[in-house]
Length: 196
Image 1: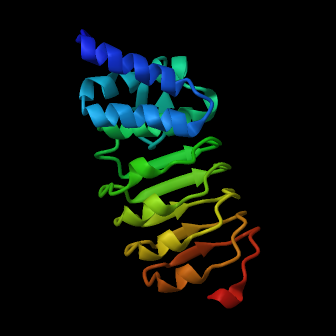
Image 2: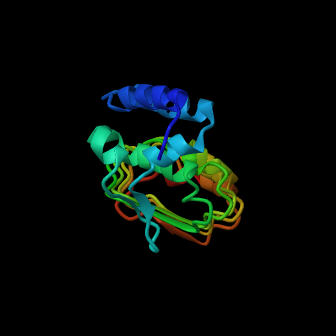
């Protein structure tokens, strides 16, 4: 892929930023690509990222595995997948033991996504971006112990199945507004049922 001088300069800046140990600096690098609006740069960053038929994002050899610190690879791969169009037709996404996934911003507004699974994703805290995934029917947050606030889920109009097994949640009151909820798993969770 041949890059012009401006693209090479931007890519060089991005590469410096995405090497950081600090997520806010890595995210600044991703924002830089976004601000330039050049799909070629996302293509370079997303080289090696794929999603299999089970909805699992894979990282092959490429920019992310070469340059991004391990603790940020899951987040950067999700951003790259979004900007390379890999998420556009996904109905299922599975994040299993992605212990560094913490930024779900790329999932905002994905209209084709109906099933989302986060298993043992220990860095996942903010579910805010999920409030805009309107067609979500299945959400599995089993063993995501850092999740404390499920208020963003209250606006999901089609959510039918929710797994909160082995989480640290105590306040379940946001679930009271989800009229479509048919299955709720709370094994090894000690919620305050008075909040319902």
